[in-house]
Length: 175
Image (cartoon, rainbow, N blue to C red; front, side, top):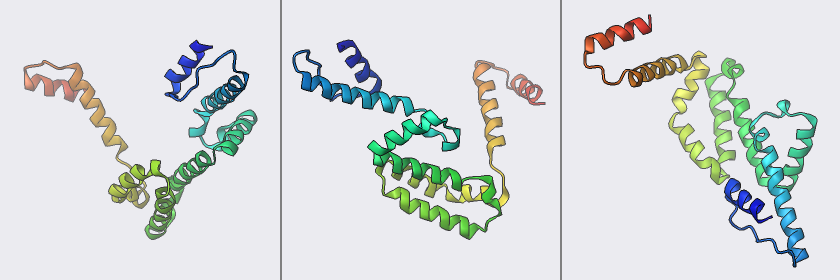
């Protein structure tokens, strides 16, 4: 059992685990409850980043059980889903003022949770670029992809001394 305790400590960073003693049955039952709760959280760790329509019936029951025990996790999940529903292409038909007001409402809701404050700050910093997605229906994903290809090409061909030959190879690679 100590091996399992160490595994849980390593996997989840759970440092407040109590060493299981075979003599103390009360402590043993408490530890089993702790381990069951950790196992439940481990089982839903992947599903909780997905939208609810991707869950099967068993996962819905499990996640509802976790949400009933961890209200703060349910609130954080709902806030993240609200942002996902806001940031969809279907909102491109709305006016920029309406989209911005919906985003400001999300800011107010998300600001109440400490873990979202960094995200809110980052979104406020890049708000104009994010709103351009709704104005023009385009992102800079193609430019980012091209930049990634160029960076990968440069790293693979590190050490070429002839600049003209290097530019010739890039032109051939992207033509």
